[in-house]
Length: 401
Image 1: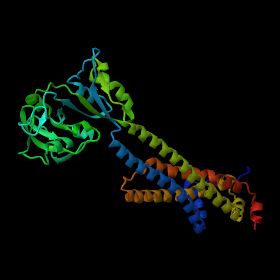
Image 2: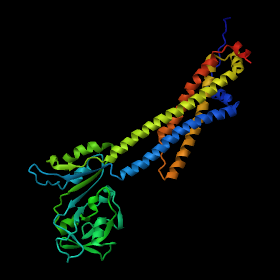
Image 3: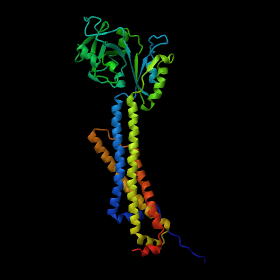
Image 4: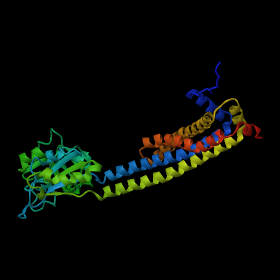
């Protein structure tokens, strides 16, 4: 007969969870307090990330109202010093640029002036201009209608006009209506709408805006746009600006003027960098606090449970199984605190954002990162206690008081 050797039973994943969970169930109050410490740290990280992201979303919304991604294209001068013109198709060509999400144009009708009626002397135009406009203009420049309606496919070919805020005041037009008309060039136009002040396109405030087709038909408009407005993806503003000149006028790109990106875009990016640094700093502190709490709990647990460790070693448990047991306890403890911290952080973010009337934004990386961080914390913080427990000799552990 050959010699038989005893082989320690292997711990299956279910056994590891059961053994690790038993150590937590026997000390519920200590587990609760330790998990609470981790939860507070993870909740702080999640809440800081959520509140900062919500604040950033509100800041981005306000900066977007300042035109951070709005570029304008206008004709410049020829080499001879004369005023250049943009091609009729420049608007459609700009609209084909990938990062451009919205595009619209206005065209100055230089031969037409704005009058309240046909009896006002021609020289007294009040400094107001007539502009042919695309239907997408309000959406592109962020303008809103104060009264009446904007031009549509049905009215843009008829003698209908929308007045800018200053133009309406100068003309004494308080509200649009079928009987309210103004005199543009040599034709009467019915006022169908009045705009609110347009901070991103202040030149529209003192303008009378008519449809592109109506400007051609009634006012002798030549069809050349004089200002093209383009909304661009924030991350592509500079690169799009570099190609707009050649896109708007491929034959003479040097005769095109393109506006520089708004200073608000620079402010937006600076705020993003500041928020990122804040998140990294506070998140690191929160994780450190949580890790120290787990390590402290597991070290005390090893010291208190030396008799249990000695008994298990005497019954055949290997050092690897002892290490696995205490690592499992540490990971379970961290996960409990991490999940609770993420839920608590989301609740704090939602409540605070609601009190500030901000959109609630909790980044996915914050929630997923919180859980992942707790696993890393549990593994690192529980490693030393687990190794220490596995190195105890059975006789030494059983002899401990």
